[in-house]
Image (tube, rainbow, N blue to C red; front, side, top):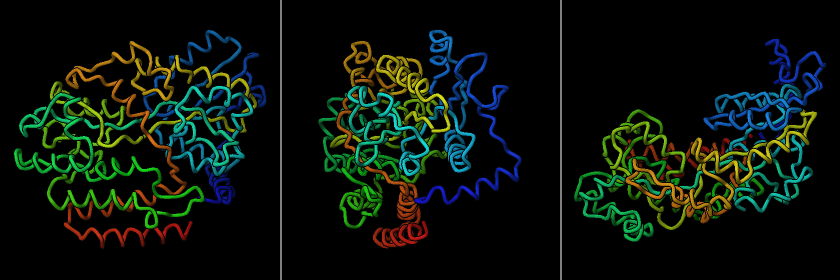
Length: 429
């Protein structure tokens, strides 16, 4: 992956064999990106962002611009973008890129316009520093994308389980009771003793909640593996395996039917490290559990899980018009609209001062001040470098944790084996 464009020939061959052609700008105008005298922009997005409403609004206000919205699955959008860049054709004028993919595409930054050349520095102070840095080159000279939403993490909890354990159910009181990871551990033991239930049901979420609070994770900015030289990841792993071995963490893997059912059943106490967009998952999996869930701050700060950026590939013939659209789309005013329309949590802290925003509550979550809680979490997130091979390390460490939780494997042996697998895979990159 580090030599992204070594794969150009490979992908070009695939495209030739498949008989693919660049249809993103193909038209009677010979690929100029204009239709009926209008500037035409192809726009790739994923997820339930609700950007179709904004596209319609923008085109009404700018009748000289036509925007073709192409919505797909997140993996498909990234794979198609990678293929298009490798082949040298087929990329859109504007593309959405998820934060976990940013490092990969940053290695191909010569295939994107530097948004600093179009005015990005003039709007930088409108966004959270740590969010902005995620799509910025190490030297700060290149800006790959403008920020969309974020996923600051909090602690969702079952009020009925907390009450049964004799712990507070009020968000502020529970936050004071479980203010650090030592008190979280003490609460876990109490919940187990009083209710027989684990404090949380997913080893991955437990591990990620601690890891995401660290100032560094798997790689340094030179993409060197640091999980053994830096203490943070191992500390998160050791804490998680300690709770697993004491029966305080369940065995459910994320996104499985069992994981979803547990939200409805109330078979554990906290959904730890839950981002803003997780609200929809809980409601979808447990539609009848309204009033039994609430949320509060996570012990010792917060991390971030998810969020995206808008970037402009160099294949676009209209970078000025493309930039004008995304600057408008991602303005604080429109991020506030996206929050109300689709629940996308804003990366523009100006929104956090809006009275209507701060007054947002959710009766499903026992009337908790959801927007205010996530806003406070967002302010405490530390900027971290994820690295192009982030998923390799993540997958192996989660496998190690799963082996400890499900098979009762020795934590240190699983750690050592995971590190060996990671090193072997990185050596082949």
